[in-house]
Image (cartoon, rainbow, N blue to C red; front, side):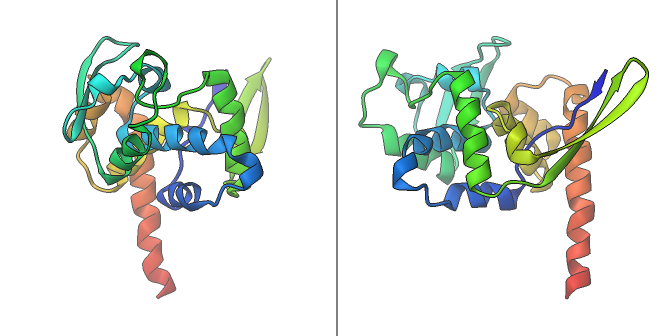
Length: 201
């Protein structure tokens, strides 16, 4: 069995990723970053961003039926998600897609590369049990990054910003608190850590 950590970017890491000047020789990472950031700012799964069509984008929000659960979602756009859509609105993509989403496997490889470039290297400890033996593994966060981290980043940061869980659940399509519980615990940890900032004054 494995006790897996929820991998997400803190607000500080999210800003570092957003503002990182991608070198000219690595331009292929720019679109990957934009798609990942779109997940971080909307809470959408990779599969839903992959299938997002221009016709799903309305004035100030997007309306989709999710691939995994067939939920109908209405997600308001903020300045960040809107800017990403605007950047690509005049570029034609196959099947009227709204964004240049590449295959998930390749995207996950590029996200790890991007995370390493941006210095998202906080050590993440995970515990495995193999045949009754406990194995502790520490990995830099960038090596654990994947497209799923975008949705988790959105949820954790939305909760830590003080947005009520029931509002976040409307955006993500979560139907019960059980699935939200790990994220609420993380938001509480962020809140506890935030109080420490007074100690440096």
